[in-house]
Amino acid sequence: MLVSNVGIMKKILYIILFICLCVPFGARCENADKGKEDFNAGEMIMKHLGDEHSWEICNFQGHEIAIPLPVILWNEGHLTCFMSNKLHEGKTYKNFRFGTTEDSKTLEGKIIYVDENNAFVSKPLDFSITKNVFSIFIVCTIICCVVITASQRAKKREGKEPKGVQTLIEMFVEFIKDDIAIPNIGKEAYGKYMTYLLSVFLFIFLCNIMGLIPFFPGGANVSGNIAVTLTLALFTFFVVMFSSSKGYWKGIVNPNVPMWLKLPVPLMPVLEFIEIFTKPFSLCIRLFANITAGHVIMLSFVGIIFIFGTINNITAYGVGVASVLFSVFMTMIEALVAFIQAYVFTLLSAIYIGMARSSHE
Image (tube, rainbow, N blue to C red; front, side, top):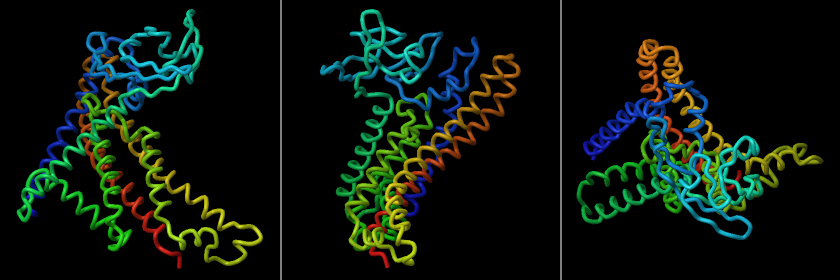
């Protein structure tokens, strides 16, 4: 088992090193034509951090090469569906177009409904398959395929030493069970929450890893989208609420503190009640902020190459060597952070579940 785990860890390390070398090249491919014009590092960073209705592969000789994604809009009681390339380069399709700063700062980059004079009328409800949504589909598909494959191999090789993907999944299962679930939830009840904890860990970890690849499919900044982290935090919130015991609520309504902290002003009960909502909020912000900060730093090192490239090529090559080395180093750190953040989110979720199940002494 140990030898098999070592082999799996080597493969994971090779993949991480490959990602580290690909990130600077990916940013270079993404900005290949920008050396001819003023390079805007902030625009490049925000474009990677943000969400889009198409999946840009690269910018070749001034032409954007992108994969169009489905646009699904609900406007004035009607459902409208089309591909995002219909709105490419400021085009209007069925009175829909992308908003600009001339319409409103808040509408910039959003799909809006306009009249015959191209003036803003309304903002439709947008249910489109954006880059982040499509990346979530990819991540979920990978997780399902890997887990199902590991399950089938485990059945065929029952009683034998695990091999390949089966070893990888068993390694994660044992890690979540022994280091997170049992210590914080208990041996009697941890089994009910293993599916959730393992799913959350694998989803966040894979999203974080794929977010390090800015030019491959799956390179969307999913974990850096606060809507995604908020949804994950709400999942934990509802699991905690449905798992809570009478003792948990008694500790909130009538905590075991001196009476002057409860009467005449119910200070501690109010603080305990607020804590119910601050816990998932901290989960949301912690994951979002750490992933976003790491991407900003990593892309900033890459952007330095193009900033100095506007001066002359010799300066760009000189600075580029140091910048690429720092980029590779930061990518290795981000690969570690990808695991740590998935671990911390899963660990805190298990702690909150365990606290909700236990009675307050």
